[in-house]
Image 1 (cartoon, rainbow, N blue to C red):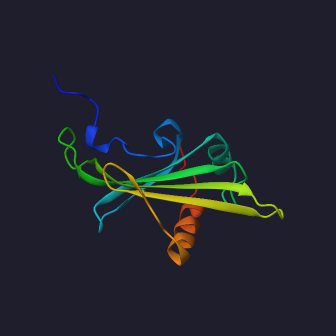
Image 2: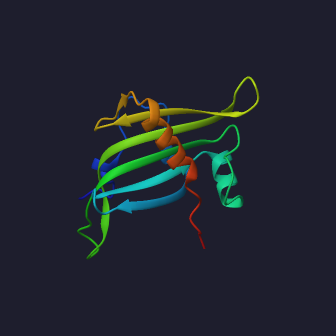
Image 3: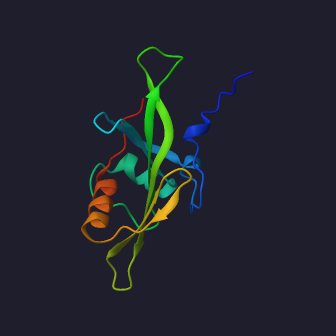
Length: 139
């Protein structure tokens, strides 16, 4: 009997959190890269994202952007579904010693996921991109 679990899309590897246990904030696709992504957040991030369309996430927020390669869904004509995991990015928001918000960023790639060192402008760009995402409107 076939399993309902999409095994290739599961997250595996040495990762600090399992964002699949969190709530979805928003999702999207990148047709050129043939990928799909979901932004997950802990309770603090989700509450904030659903009530504040703009402004910085508060301290204590954790966000995680999971990106998968995508494949056709054999059960729904024209539908796409996650395939093998491409990356996991985690942003944690805290308050620095002098008061302003600070952001920790971790990047994991491959399958199984492995830590990747991302520095400089690329790191800043990814943090800004993830923090700029707002909650999808849900019925």
